[in-house]
Image (cartoon, rainbow, N blue to C red; front, side):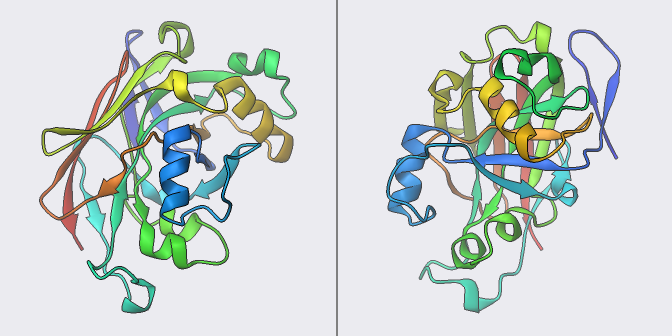
Length: 236
């Protein structure tokens, strides 16, 4: 079980969700780049949140390694070989049970915010007819941290700079103001379909600029008012 510090309040929180709900295609420019890469099955922007699950085995903390898997050649359609991508995301942690939550009350159910890396095995994601969960749920494919910032201390959560930095080079650079579906809408929408429990994680999508990881890389997710989540990359 992971523990993350709660900043600035002090203390630690156990990261042990019953489920991780993630959003795809929630920044306009990333939606467009995904369509161009045929990750999306539709040729337009989503008219409601695009949801998928990541299983809790993905979770690793700051400094822990992202492990690139051995991928069966039947999944690989790219001449360059298997592709594992980084995706910088703002994640929220649910603070109490939530079901059929009105948009106007949704922020009352948020315990805090943190950085998340929605690591994705593109070969399997594009191959798999059943959805994205398998390509998104390999072991170590969900780095989280470095801390949790309470909802009442984060500032304007819809105006935070979000970046990913690969080997010292900025490769994603955007603002949460660019989210297609805002956080209260997301919580309300998800809670219509599943009961959210205390400790559950919702990751809100990634901006444009996703790209591949290689053994020896170091990937950082940097979100304003939260901090930097840094993880090395190794091969299986």
